[in-house]
Image (cartoon, rainbow, N blue to C red):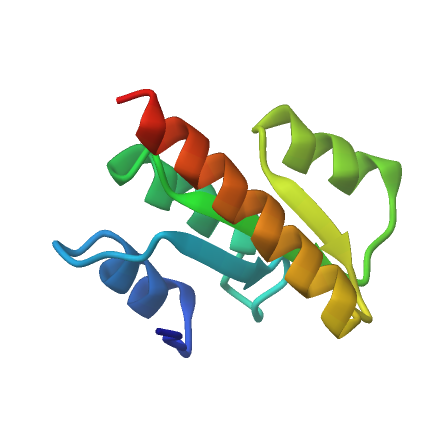
Length: 102
């Protein structure tokens, strides 16, 4: 099941609900006032098990460091189908491993 939110506020509400998401894919720059990294961090405060992948056309070391400092994944745009699928598979395997340890 795939769900799309039009802004960070809507995405946060959907991700933190009782039937919240297992994964969050967000652009680092979502618009003038929305920040994908801030969204991911806020969502993980409520749902620590939420798997988050950020994407950006910004390839700077500073952004990579900010994202990795929080233990999140970053993929660079343009994103090929193969790259996105590979990242989803990595996140799925990670989710299964953490569920098995509970």
